[in-house]
Length: 376
Picture 1: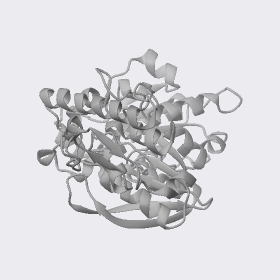
Picture 2: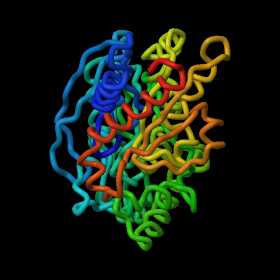
Picture 3: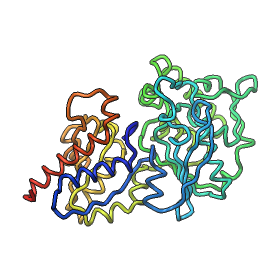
Picture 4: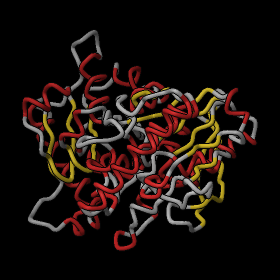
């Protein structure tokens, strides 16, 4: 529930709503916090698979120092969450500078994992404040991005318009030993009308003119990257994820992009839990067109529909807004999606009251479900 509730807090709110609705009816509630590569990925994986949380001081998206959490799973994989180091929630709305925001801190987290001896890295790249193609992260790992005068570029995506050369001489050699899996929840290419700048730039504070400027800069970055590496990945699905971080990690670190929700569902043993479930409750900030393209709700619905030898488990989804049709929800394996507001409310009011609204919406939904089963 971006900007309002973490996955853990949302689960707790829904559990309270269930408890209010069930009264004296016996009921067992299993809480499974989920993430799809964005905010809460480290927390969800550590809770689902077991492991140890660590903290690193890194440079945030606009140059300030931030405390970023990362984790080590019991199977010796490191988990890095871009939102912790370079996330949109780290920048207040009135202070967002999409042309200058850098992913440098995410690169510092990767380096911290390498320093600690880990070579199998999971990197969740949702929720970023940046549109720099992962250039900042590469700089933190030793790459030099140079203009025609041989000078290092300034931070941010707009500066990539001046990029003339990428020097990988001092790129951290340990990356050659590393296996990097990127948890990605979108399938956008790097550039163009459906690319990183046009689709996600506005929510990061970019004006229409800035969107065009950053898109052109990312296109130049892709051309110089092709000349440097011989790899042309700008049109690959997911290259535009997290402001182009997907492109940077694939092109220069040989990373593999995978749907984040699938990995988290596997780590949390969600399929096994569904075999004994009668109802699934889940939530997302906005149930909209993006939900159709690999977001958490889509993964939950798909798994629930396949449970119990295909008989399935019904899923009720809550959202701050619900923009999908009934047919679209059915295709996702969701029987109904209910909006949280119980009266006309502004966005700020919805965010401020998110916990209360989710508790109340859950209570109403579960009472109706119990009534339909003749249990009230």
